[in-house]
Image (cartoon, rainbow, N blue to C red; front, side, top):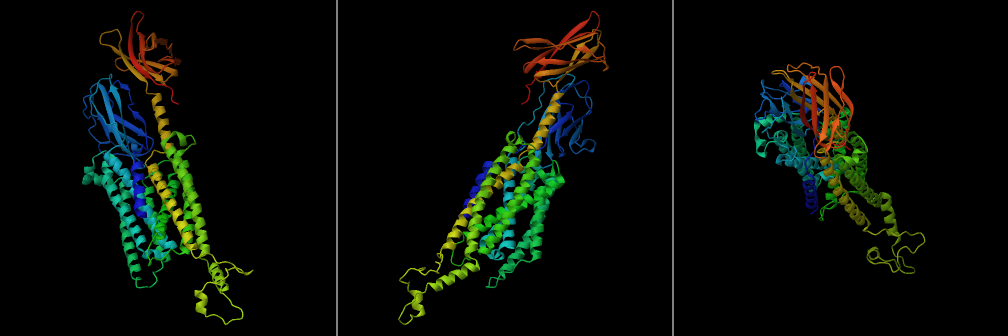
Length: 625
C-alpha cells in the first residue's frame, strides 16, 4: 500500500509538472538582420546565439518567396565559433522576402527554434510556412520530459537504497523490500535511459515518435553531447547490474542462518565511484555544462544529485523497512536508524549548500526570482525544502528517543527496576520464584523512596510509529522536491533569460532600417535612401539617412527631409529636421509620442529644381518595462 501511494503521488506530480520547457539559449543576432532590406543578394546567412549550439543537416533552412529552399548545403559553424550557425546561399536569388527557419540544440541539451525574414530589393508576399510551436510542445517533447522525471526517480532509488545497505544496515540487503527497491530503481533508470536515447534524435529535430527507430537518426544522436552521456550511463548500468547480482548471491549464501556478509571498504569505494560516474552523466549534459563557472558548476551538480539520492532514496528505503509486517520480520535496529539520521543530515546540508550556489549561478539577481519562470519555480522549491527541514527535525527527535530507549544504560535501569518490584513478604516463607513472576504485587510499584518506575513496554513501538509517520511525510515532500528539481532542469535559467533579453534588446536597437528606392530624375537612374531609426521606440530617437546611387555609391543631394505621421491618431507630420553631416544626414532628438504604425515621408531634392517624395511604413514599439 505504501509503494502504491508513493507511485500514485509521483505519477500525479509528473503528469502535472511535465509542461513544456523553455529555451535555454537565445538568438542574439543574425546577418542579414531580421526585417532588413538588402540591395543585393547575400552569400551567407549567419546566426549568432548566446551560448554554443549543435545542429543537424536541416537545422537551418532559407526559403524563397515561393517556399523553395535556397541553401543547398547544411549549416556549419562560422569561423570555428561554437555559438554560430552559417549556411551558404545559391547564386542569383530573385527579389522578394525570404524566410529563415532554424532549430538548434543548446549546450545543455535542449532544442530551441525560431524564424525571421529579410528582403532582397524590396519586401514582397511570401508563401513560406514555418512552425511556430514551442520545441517541447510536441508528442516527443512531452514524452521526453516525463522520461526525464522517471530517470531522476530511478537514480534516487538506486543510490539511496544501496547507500543505506552499505553504510547504515548491511543486513537490509537480504530483505525483500530493499531488493525490490534496488531492482525498481535499476529498471526505471535503465528503461528511461534507453527510451531517452531512442527519442533523442526526434527530440532534437522535431520528428515523430515513430522516427525513434530510425538507425541513421540514432547514429547521429549518439555522437552528440547528450547522446554520448546517455550511452555512458547505459554502460555504467550494465556494470551495476553485474555487481548487484553478485551482491545478491552473497546474501543468498547466508540464508541458512549465518550472518550476512559485511560490506568492506572496497565495496563502499566501488559503490561511491559508480554513483559519482552516474551523476556525471547528468552534469555533463545539463545546466552545469553551460553558462558561467562550468569547471566549478559540474562537481557541484554531481554533489547535489548524489545528496538528493542518498537522502530521498534512503528515506524511502527506511520507510519500507519500518512498515514491514509479519512475525518473521526483523525490526530496523535503532543503531541503523541513528546512522541514517546522521547521514541524512549531512546529505541535506550538502543539498542546501550546493543549492545556494546553483541558485546564484542560474538566477543572477533578486528581481529574477519574481520576474522569471525559473525564479518563481525556485521559490516554490525553497518553500518545500523548508517544510522538509521541519519534518526532518521531528524525525530526528523520534530517532533520538528510539536510540535512547535501546541504549545499554537504559536496559540496565529497566532490569534493575524490574528486580526492585518483586513482592516481598514479612514473617512468612518466601514464595517460589515462578509465583513472584506470575502474580502482580498488591501494592503499586515505586512505593519505595529509591525506586524508579520502568517505562511501559510499548514505548519503543510508540517511538517507531511516530518516526514512521514523520518519515512518510518527509519522503512525500522529498518526492515533491525531486519533481520541482526536474522541472527546473527543463526551464530556462533566469541568468540565461536575462542575457537573451539583453541580446534581443541590442538587436532590436538596430532593426528599424528602411531602404526606399526613388527616381533620381535621369533616365534609368534609380537611387536608394536608407533610413535608420534608433532605438525605434516611443521617446527620443536618432534618425540617420544615407542616399545611394544606382551603382551603390554614395550620392550627395542638396536637401533631404524626413517626416513621420501617425495617420490613425492624426499625429504629425513630425519633422526630423535632418542636418547634413558631410556624407549622411542625421538628427538626434526626434521624439515619437505613440507606438504603432507610422508613415515615413522622405523628400529628396536631387537638383535645384528636381525633387521627389517617397514613403514607407515603420512600426514603433513601446518602451519595455
